[in-house]
Amino acid sequence: MHPHFPLFPLPLVAHPFARIPLQIFEPRYLELVKHSASSQQSFGLVTLNPAAPSGPSTAIYKPTILPIGTAVKIVDFDQLPNGLLGIVCEGQYRFRVHDPVVNDANLLEASIETLAPETEFVLPNEFDDAVGVLIALLEHGYAKRVGYDRARGENYWRQHAVQLSWALASLLPVDDETKYAWLSMDATPERLASIMKAVEQMQS
Image: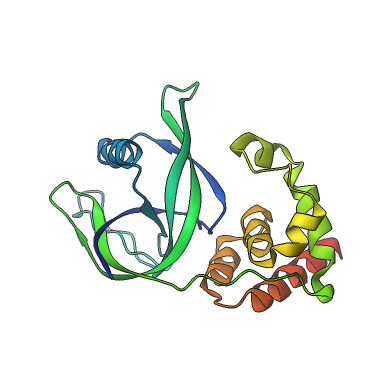
């Protein structure tokens, strides 16, 4: 268990190995990003609970979040045309949140339980089509813009089924409920089966 782990609650889902672009404008999160970049430490991206009731604007800051998040590190940053700080984060590992609290700096933090990483394995033949889907997604403008590694060819992805599943989960245009369901799955074959079912539905 890691205590006092800083959390950034957002209306999105982050996955391990994914690239996530963010615009930072609130002072408290500017400080979080500054500390993370200077210390090269991770922080957690957690998903705001869409079912939670929203309080009045004067309510005390205590966001309601979903229990599984992803630790990320900052891999790039720049000032955006609108003057805001833009950063690109890369997902590292999944965790489960315990006892979230708002600290004196008005930032959300919690004790986190790191979820066991999945061991890499060769892609089963039944998911062979997943490689072509990912290669096509990596050619899209978004993937290029946030810096996904496009030099990795088909052979690499066939040898790294876990990374393949996370890359597909992050890049496919599905709703956050589906993305969170994939994040919550502990087994890569289950995740890949669900992903390819979603791909089939898109193509039908």
